[in-house]
Length: 114
Length: 115
Image (cartoon, rainbow over all chains, first blue to last red; front, top):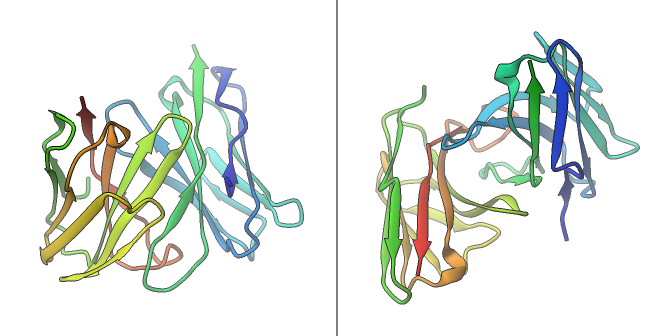
């Protein structure tokens, strides 16, 4: 039973346009959500996060939106750059103290075409 | 970059042999984690540690054991490797045990192939 779902395995976007990566979750106990970016042969790196008490968080070109009623979040990248080409993982935490237990989605491979 | 080193980076082993993967950190972070990444599954938590000699199971702990005798080292052992344990293994560290307080930093991964 997959609690965090990224239904699009891949996404191609032209350079300069907006990239929208989507993520759905089923566990109502999740209260913190994160996006990680991963290049080939490297470990994931933290990109941006959002608490369940907010509906938007912005950091430069990256914005994450959270719709709690729909159990849906999205990552917007504007403008998209070729260096953004990577696999993006959505992750969620139930906020239990003492364990940083993240539940990850399967990832979406973003290709930004110059 | 956070000081995390995984060794070895690549390993091929035979079914039934024991294998130990090492994660070494220089950040003095309290929490350490082992994840595995498989096609179609994203990353899944195997075991984690919240201090020296303090460990607990994650989502996919069967067939794995861990040990942490020093703050800086977290070992993952496959007692008798199976083909289903062919995967890429990532170590991660965090200063806090709560995702809301800090981010987790990941190592570069170990690609393990069990033949």
